Image (tube, rainbow, N blue to C red; front, side, top):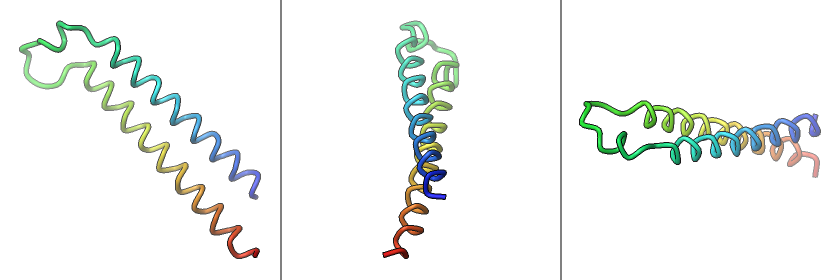
Length: 78
């Protein structure tokens, strides 16, 4: 069971890094025209950046919960 949890933690950590990189790429692709736009509301780029950030936070939360579960399971063995 510990091996399975460790693999899940690694997968969640990799997913977190992927979402971080995707968010940075979207941020770097933001154009000056989008930043200076007079249209009301957020731009498509801003919405995509926000989506990437929320996904990253979700994967981080999953990783932290899995680490907590792993520690609780191994804490009783000592």
